[in-house]
Length: 440
Image (cartoon, rainbow, N blue to C red):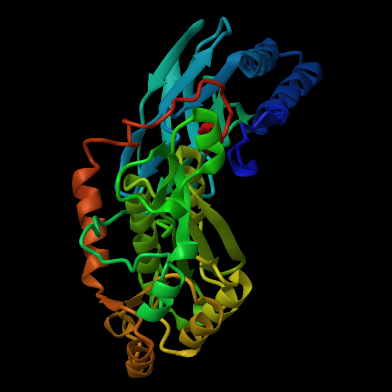
C-alpha cells in the first residue's frame, strides 16, 4: 500500500466562479438616455439616430461578451511530475473558443502564489478555434509549485464591457534539491559500533540464516539443520550471513537557532542538499534509508527502499524548512536504532547532541557531517563539538560552503537539456491532478 502522501488525488474538481462582466464605459448608457431625452424635447431626428446608435453598440457589446463567457476556456498541462532545481520545464497552454464570435484580445494571467515569475500573456483566438502557447518555467529553488488557478480577461471590440473568466484547475510539480555525488564519503557501517571486544562477543548473535546446503567437510556440527537432515536422509547445514545492517538513518538538523546565511545561501540549504544526495546514493547502492528532520515538526521516516519511498523522502526534503525543534530532541525521540548506520548533518556548535548519541544510540555506526557555519557568516566556536566527536571515536567531516555552490552550478549546467528527469518521470493524464501524487 502506498503512503498517504503518494495516493492519487481523487477529489472532485473545484467549481470555477461565474464569469464576471463589468461595464467599463459608463458614459454609453448616460449618453443614450440624454440623446433620447433631447429627441423627446426637441423632436430633432439627429438625437434619435445618436441615441439608437449608442443603444445598438451597447447591445452588441453586451451580446459579444455574453457569447464569449459561454465559449471561452483555457487548459493548462504540464507533463512532468517532478523536476530538479535548474530545470526549464515547458507547459502547454490551450486557449479554446467554442463560440461563433472571435475574441479580439485575451489576457491570460497566472494567479499561482508559488511561482516566482507567473506567466502573463496577451493573444487572440478566432471563432470555433483554439490557440496554443508553450511557456517555459525555470525553477531555481526547491519546493512544491502550483501552476494555476488562471484568470482570463477579455472584452468586446468597442471596449464597453470587460469579461473576467476564472479557471480554478491547478497542476503541481515538485522541484527536488540539487545533488552531489558524495561517492567518496565514508559512512561508518551499521551493525557493530563501539569497541572491538563488544563486536567479538556479539558476533554469534549477529548472524542469521540465509539458507541451507549439504554438509561439506570442515563445517561445524553446530550448524547442522537436524530437521532438514532427517527429511533428506543426508546432513544439511545452515548457510549463515552477517546481520550487520546496511541501512542508513539520515538525521538533519533544521533548528532555526543554529542556522547561518539566508535563502539558498545558507547552512540549512546545504544540509538539505547533503541529505538528498545521501538518500540518492543509498538507494543507488540498494540500501534501505530512513530520514529524520528536526524543524517545524519532528519527522521520522523509517528505512525502506523502492521508488515510492524515494519519492516520499524527496518530497519531504523539497518542502523542508527551519523550525524550533533541536537535534537533541530529535535524537531523544528516535531512541536507539539498533543496527543502522546513523548519519548526522548539522551546523550546530553545541555538543549536547553528541552526548545524546552516546546515551541512546549504542549499536550502530555513527558518521557526523558538520556544516561549516563560519563560512556562512556566523561566528561560533566549533572546537567543542570536534573534541566531543574525537573523544567518542565518531568519524566526522567538515562540509564547506563551496559544495553548495557546486551543487547549484552543476545542477543548472547539467539539467538544462534534460528537464523534469525524463528517464523516470510519469506523465499524468487527468487534468487538475497533482502531478506528484500520481507517482507510485
